[in-house]
Image (cartoon, rainbow, N blue to C red; front, top):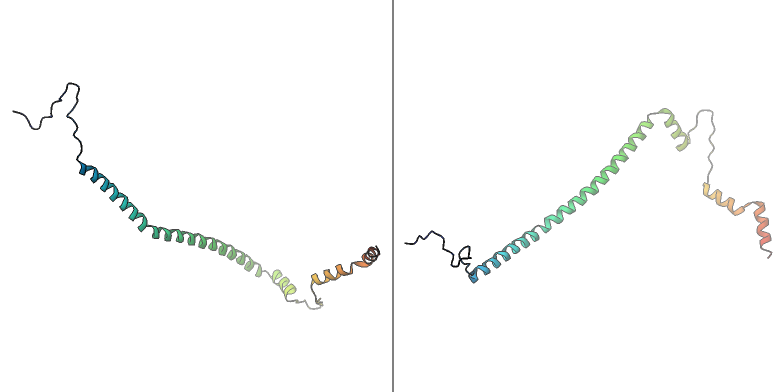
Length: 142
C-alpha cells in the first residue's frame, strides 16, 4: 500500500525533492494579464487624480499669495496705528497744520512762494552766472 500523502521519493540518489514540472501555458498568460491589469489600474488612478492635484497646487499658490498680502496689510496697519498715535500729540498736529495748511499763530505772518524748486534750479542753470557767460563767449570765438 502506498500512502498518498507521503512525499515522492527522489528518483536519483542526488535529487533532493520531486522533479519540477513545467508550468502550463495558461499560467504565464495569467501572470501577464494580472500585471497588465495592475498597470491599467495604476494608470487610471494617476489620471483620475491629476485634476484634484492641480486644484490643490493652485489653492496652495493662492494661499501663499494671500498670506503675503496679509503680511503687507498687517505692516500697513501697524504703520497707520503709529501715525494715529502721533496724531494725539498736540505738537505734531500743530506742525502738520503749519506745514500742510499754512496756518500761523496770532501775530505771525505767512509768506507763500509760488513756483517749484525745480523751475528755480533750472533758471539758475540757464543763467549760470556772469563768469559762465563770459567763458561761453570766449569758447564761441574759436
